[in-house]
Length: 256
Image 1: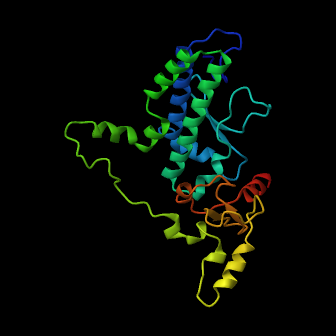
Image 2: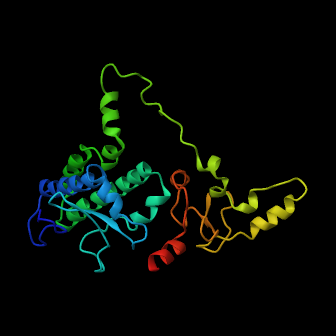
């Protein structure tokens, strides 16, 4: 594929092998950012800056920069605002999260090219098969590749698939992230009062109090409550967030 640009020439005849080479090159650049160049990558992802993205290029280089200005963009865009979560998470967890989003972006770019160049079912199958035979960026960054190789050896223990450590859930460390504060304290004498208060707790995004049994999360900055699904935060992801900031507070910080 072309140098450090975004992709192939529009009118060029492309094959699954050529798109796969583009995928491998972009992947190599992003792996460099998250491994050998990780110190520089960490510094570039300053939370005080605007929404930043990690790009991998066809010449195996990487760049942390603002998203493309044109709408719609020439190719799919990577995850936006990776820098905002940097200081609110453990560094390894943050890098793993960026790796997951990077894998997702690479797949979207590869199959964007597949659609753009009119790949048939066999070409798409071949492209996915080649991609699937390679370790993901997440597996490389977290060391899962080495673990998998070790588990495949004849002498590996049958217990190797068991988790090596327990991760303290956010519910245990901060009950605040699981249920609205109106539910934190309950008593037999004022149960009705607590229930009434809970009914008045509204999601800061959708403005309703539906889904009382669903996952809620509170912004540590403005102390508003949100349905996890409304702000795209799952209980599993919340476990790795030390200080959560809602979209409104994040955008205010970016504008400042």
